[in-house]
Amino acid sequence: MTWDTQTWTPLPGFPAGVLGGFAVTDTELAAAVLERIAGWRKSLAAALRTGAPPGISEAMRDLLLELLGVREPLTLGHYPYRLSAFPRPSNDPVQNLRNILLWRARIVDFLSDIWDTLGAPTFDLDECTETARAFEPEDMSPDRCYLCLDSVPEGAGAGHFDKCPVQAAWGKAR
Ligand SMILES: [Zn+2]
Image (cartoon, rainbow, N blue to C red; front, side):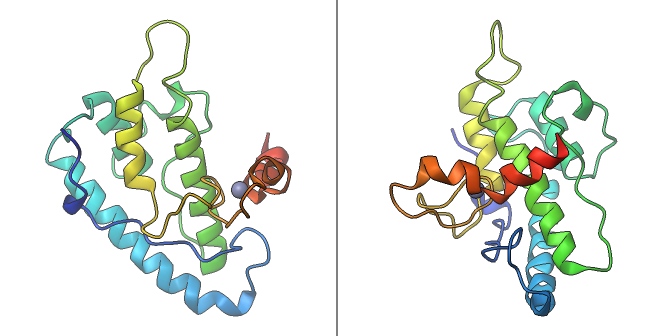
């Protein structure tokens, strides 16, 4: 059983370079993407509110509702991944988009890692894989970094780690 993607609007693609050289003049583009992200967030929250989807535990469902900022953040702080509720918007669409990209990166990093713990994991690999689908942009492809979503030239994957703007932002934040 898998979680039916038809029950929510897919996450739109993020314009390349949002964290790096995204030009201020692209405010309009950022605003348009933000509007589509708002639609994704609303539809995903609505899908989760009807109950835990197949393959998703109640604990994961609660966590997702907290991440989407539509439920009191009761369990967010339990995980050492600096997870946070959906960023509060400011007047700057480009900054909002950056904040959402970083917010999303924390979540996919968490989902790629949390099942791989000593002892009984809180969430298992299948559940994390299933959940991660909700955070995959509709234009995702294997040549893109799963954190910053920028295109990474073939074979340059290992070298990207040092250049990844998300890793750079985390380096400052940590
Ligand atoms: Zn990256």
